[in-house]
Image 1: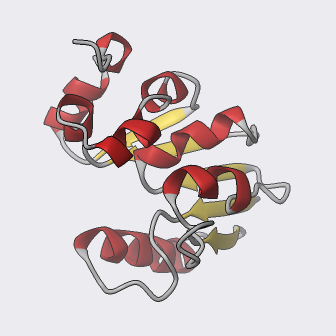
Image 2 (image 1 turned 60 degrees about the vertical axis):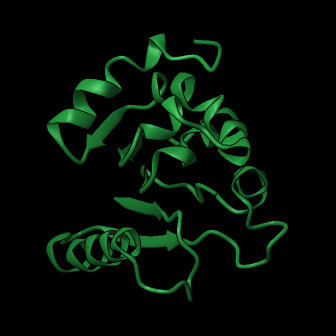
Length: 142
């Protein structure tokens, strides 16, 4: 089985809680995932191709993966560009749906619809799980 982890962080990004989650998940999957061919795709480091929306088109590939795991919900819209066989997304935070900045608007507009198309969602808390179930009702006009 081939599994690809799509990371929202860049390869040489400063350590943060989010990057630690990605790195530890990857390392633990290597240890525990017997019989799994595991690889990861980082967000491009280039400031132009590495912005979230551009990276949807230029950065993330499926390379015949059986399962693709996006480690952050803002990668969910890649499903409109590439359709992985099985697509799982970790939802970390839904606050930008309620309080979006201008740049977050661009990446969040297609996110709720994309989350409805994925095969599985990993929510980091019960609160996020409950709020994620409401994503069908969120819109920036509310």
